[in-house]
Length: 170
Ligand SMILES: [Zn+2]
Image (tube, rainbow, N blue to C red):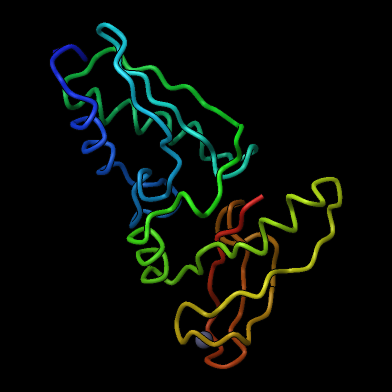
């Protein structure tokens, strides 16, 4: 089968089944990193914007997308990465944000993006106020800039004492 035999809608549906490698409960579509799908002759071209430009998971994501479409019979898959405009949490679906919270990861806070965006050259910046994904308490503390993966920071809730990952955005 080639891309000639499928519709763009069908490809989006298949991509909705591709999990983010770092957060298995959320798909790359719900995360908002798949920006466009187009069919060019027999090829399927998928445009991806990483959550931040140095995201080490991007190659894994590109491979997962290719593998998923290959599995559905599309042989010619091209991945294009687009760095501008930069990914924002606005691109995450409501279902994606809810899944993230259910998984015990605090969703990205808009404030964090604004700060890093405005002061891109300044490495030190205020840690964002992140609500605890377990008890929703706003009393949390950054314990490490790096959580289980480079895309996450480790926080601790001062009320329920639970540690949690915060999905940060650069
Ligand atoms: Zn808590």
